[in-house]
Image (cartoon, rainbow, N blue to C red; front, side, top):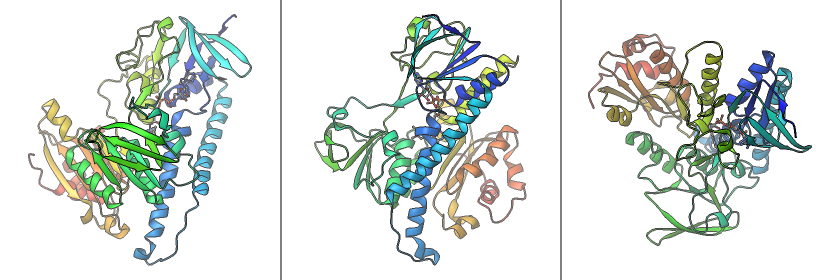
Length: 457
Ligand SMILES: Cc1cc2nc3c(=O)[nH]c(=O)nc-3n(C[C@H](O)[C@H](O)[C@H](O)COP(=O)(O)OP(=O)(O)OC[C@H]3O[C@@H](n4cnc5c(N)ncnc54)[C@H](O)[C@@H]3O)c2cc1C
């Protein structure tokens, strides 16, 4: 079969890839984008967007249930099929917007499973039969999928991943979540707020492993306050039963816990095996990630990798920045992945937002800092909202610049972005402290935070 020639192929339509594909197609290049079926990538279809839509339903359900505290007592019911329907509708709308964008750009969307069959030739199993595509430049943006650890009985128990959990039309009675990372925490709390009994199992000594201990402890306290159970430093040795019916996990010490549903959120696996990357000369590291340089070049001439498979932090905005790195090279710029400041949020209640260094990272790098903290409880807007949980913390360097910021509290992501901008601008913390900030906003807490006398840890 003769390969169809393109100027550029994007293999996998994640955030970075689809943005690049549209950009280059609009610029008049002949572009093919190979995608197994998630129009718009994981974020829109099975990850960020449906999870945040579900979380919104869960928040409203919990708030309405607490309505008497706000002077609106009412009986609150739950229509889980409607929750799933709303989530699906939000997804469908975004998929339609993406599809329109693809069409308008003029790119050739090739739907089907792709694999390399020769150094720069990709074969795609489309519904209409196989198609072979070739181009002098190929961009891999294949993403990751939920990993199912090799625990005896786990695969046979047919656990849900985020994909199935986000489509549930009935509420699990007793949900067991394997993994205390951000996906497990977000989904675990959402189902708890909707009324499920939830146990989160984490094999490490704390949930949210990369966070400072004070943050992880405050998260645990808040989640426990919602009624979520935790098993931390807990190793599951065996699973029996079937998720959706009755499932039992057995711990190393012989104790057991049973639930109706099991959700696996215990890490992600790159989509790099079984697709002929070795034929293309693309080398992988021990974790299966594509080896790249700071400009995202792989070991194969004319092939780049973007997003999670390139080891980019697992966030949509980080994947988008990989597109910018590629675009920069195309236009003679020098943007790289080195030293990027990548903020992130964990959309639990209270929300976690982080940018720059935390204390663990500063200590590891041997960077000296002073610290300021402020409980959210003293921020006037937090009181009017009834969102008093959490705290803010900032690390300040010897030159008075802000090295890092963390907030656990309502709208943390929005508040963090103000600090992020100050950090990008290299402003001293005193500029934020002395700014006139509108009252009563949650960001007003930043003025209060930076008015605290910074102290060595
Ligand atoms: C439950 C959940 C919630 C999340 N929430 C957030 C959040 O709130 N904020 C945030 O920033 N990030 C969040 N993330 C992470 C975010 O979804 C990813 O980091 C983001 O989608 C970027 O991924 P990517 O660009 O690397 O690839 P992806 O978006 O995963 O795209 C890769 C694409 O390649 C396709 N593909 C793979 N192999 C093949 C093949 N052989 N042939 C054809 N097509 C193929 C896939 O179908 C997929 O569409 C969440 C993730 C999960 C799982």
